[in-house]
Amino acid sequence: MASHEQSYKAGRAEGRAHEKGEQMKESMKEKAEAAKQKTMETAEAAKQKTMETAEAAKQKTRGAAETTNDKTKQTAGAARGKAEETKETSGGILQQAGEKVRNAAQGATDAVKHTFGMADADEDEHNYPATVTRKD
Image 1 (cartoon, one colour):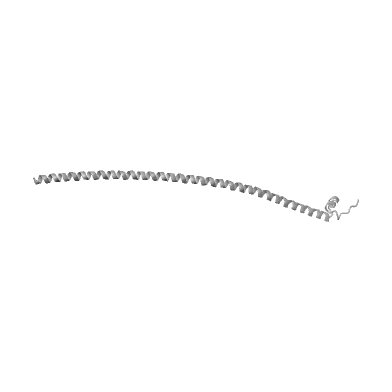
Image 2 (cartoon, one colour; image 1 turned 180 degrees about the horizontal axis):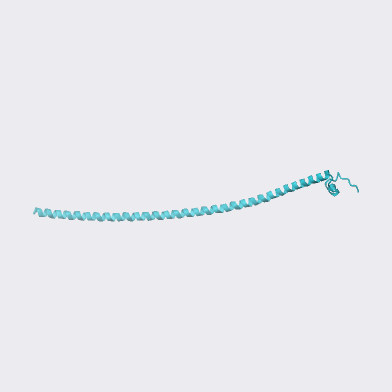
């Protein structure tokens, strides 16, 4: 009967081993599924964080661009005002210089006319009052 008892024990051991194997197999499936789920959750969290960071960077860039645009407009306005002021100032200076040149040229013309006797008596009296003697 030893053979029957040994066979029984062997069958029982085989059954336990099979059961233990099934339990381990099921445990591994559960662990794999849990790891897969955790990986998916981590990936989703990383994706969400990346999207939030990208949106924050986008908003920061937009804000910086608006600030730069405003600063550029202010600088351009100030430059435009300064250019207008400089134009007015230089226009006045050029006008004064033009008048001086015109007056100097007129004075030179009058002097040449007077020297060559081409000036009218009224012009001589007006331009050179001390040197003109009238014969009336």
